[in-house]
Image (cartoon, rainbow, N blue to C red; front, side):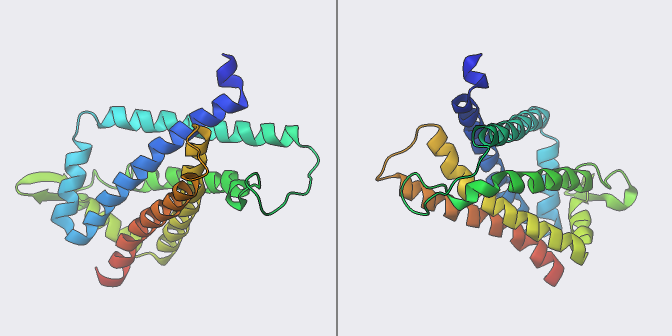
Length: 221
């Protein structure tokens, strides 16, 4: 049990759960881009996903990893504060200098937790049982998630909140990926700078991939 209560153990577990969610948001982003292909394609994809019998297991895994990730984030933040009750000066250069993003990770995470909850309320448990949100693709009746998505993102406030949250996702990922690799011992003076750049590119692709569909909907659908 000492490993699970130690800072090193919690950092490694946080790194693993972070990588799980990094993979999830990338695949989720790819699915969202199908909105641009039209209602039949997007609704068909959504129906195939939600009717998969293994979906509940995947959702439980994501929920478990999210709870562990949040717990570890709070645990490590409080532990760091208690270990350094008095702030001290830090140099801005050198391999041991704290990256500025790390100081904001708990702030990013708090915003994202609120976003995940509100996003699920809107799209997972929102309209869908009403006749107005039913459609048929190739003779199969299914939820008209495309219509709901269009209605939501034609509201400027909802669109602005979503874009802001996706920018936060990008910021969180840009440091989170590098930090996860480092926590898991994947560090080398030659390769670590490449991992850091990979984190920035990955974060930018995910954030822009999420932002593009709702902006497209707002402007053209």
